[in-house]
Amino acid sequence: MTPTTAFPLPDPALAELLTARLAVVEERLRDAVAHADVLADATARHLVNAGGKRLRPLLTLLAAQLGDGQRPEVLDAAVVVELTHLATLYHDDVMDSAPLRRGAPAAHEVWGNSVAILTGDLLFARASSVVAGLGPEAVRLQAATFERLCLGQLHETVGPQDGEDPVGHYLQVLSDKTGSLIATSARFGAMFAGCPPEILRTVTGYGEKVGVAFQLADDVIDLSADGARTGKTPGTDLRERVPTMPVLLLRARVAGDAASEADRALLTQLDSDLSDDAALSRAVSALRAHPVVAQTRELAVTWAQDAVAELRPLPAGPARDALVAFADALVDRAS
View (cartoon, one colour):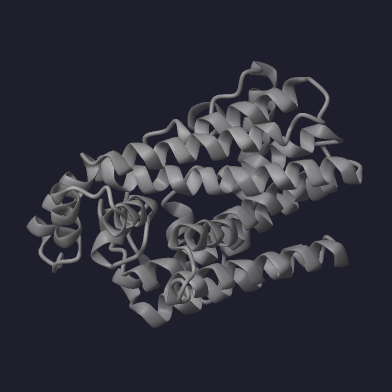
């Protein structure tokens, strides 16, 4: 998608500029995943061809408008963050047993788990190759981000430790799994546009918070949106027992003194066998109607507002306005 359709920007001239720059990134992204090996070429292109919002490279291009956004390194950085994101999707879909991704069968459904995991590794390798051309600082930042992505997945997989607040644990998982790469996307853009350190710190803080807001909004969308629109099967996280904020908030209610019988009955339903499609559909419908979903959306809005607050030190202008609009659009979306 282009910036003007996926995330409307308030300045038409800036939207037109970023649309053109994003088209160049798309070309380079397709070149970056091309492979001489026939199988590797097919598997690596699978998710690229399925499309997507390209919000991470868009954010890189947008943050670069705070400096010299026309520098060629900005485009390479945008390719790096999207390659990294795509690589994680191959791995995530295997771990979550997700049947669909962006409206297409997940790679592991087509080629099996091992091929999907190895394809993710190939894309990480391609991202590493591109980032190596951007210099040691970029390589260090990419490595630190990769480490956080792995830690986030690890902590999501094992769950909170004894005595650890499950909601706080989940928010840290979101910061690592989603916020870290979105923060790096913004930092790369500003960094390769020649922005000073204070602006790098500002957009990094913004990206971290907006990433958490984005994922909390996804928790709502997973329950409330049409699967045909999102390209993902509703309730996949419920079926695979992957924790999401609505379920964690419901568990917190049941563990407290104010839980109703309806709360307890719903939690029992969610903890039952959801392998049957009809049972999963009933569970999704029941959870969708519960107040914890609205509470999750309120949390997403709060995190987006906190992200916007990080932008106060930036000078007024189209780039700052666009970053504000970007944060609002991430939580006010249907897919």
